[in-house]
Length: 80
Image 1 (tube, rainbow, N blue to C red):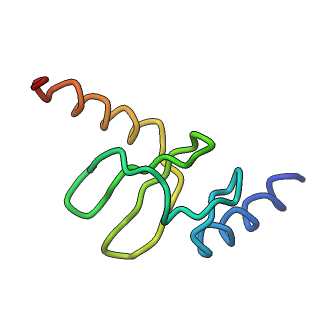
Image 2 (tube, one colour; image 1 turned 45 degrees about the horizontal axis):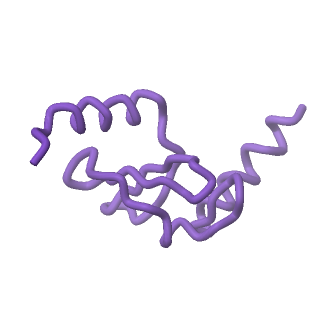
């Protein structure tokens, strides 16, 4: 019963470019890095992670696989 209410509410918040947890603006979220040329991983101040698609100009919640991909790429980079 709860998912039928929560899912549309979260999609409306994401369309308005707001975090689904704290309703902070995702435009001000911390940029963690690139997943690809068109996609960036972001972190809100409440620590929820999002993927910004530059091509579609929209946000979506980051999946566990996307977060792990970013961490793998981060570990490959040499420390300066």
